[in-house]
Image (spheres, rainbow, N blue to C red):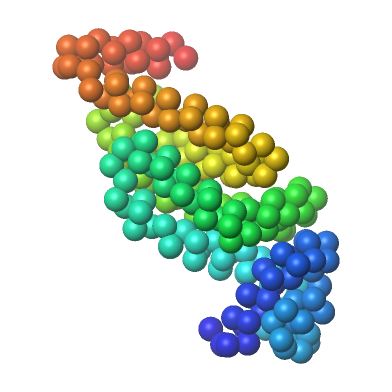
Length: 210
């Protein structure tokens, strides 16, 4: 990637932070990047396409920054610990504010919505990989849609991040509730073979009658 394109990508995120999503334009992006605004259109075609590229680039970099920690996770509670760490770091970096503005703007912009959804899917894919590894052999794997569960966990993290901005204590309570569910999964996984067979039988009956 050329130095100018990288400056424009970084400048886009700076412009969102400084001016809000509604204040993002070729002029504000170029000013933040320190380049001529004509280069926005030369390299990316439009401000929307540049915003899409910046969103994807930024999310990919943030996911990569945590991939090693996700790989070391050995329990659902550890996954939540990574989520807590991620929440604090992303808020300090100003990324939660950027995400909130992108999500709000995407509600009325299908093209931006598709790009934001694709960026969030990068987190979903990472979390789904962890869940599949952790829940292999667990009774929960018999009934859980792990792809859907990964989306639910990702959505919960996003919601809790945004909620923390208006109610920090409430967001901690929410994380605590998720940790209680993680403990429940661990308790079930620690059941003896007879209890697990009985639980699996009940799960299978429940699945057949859904």
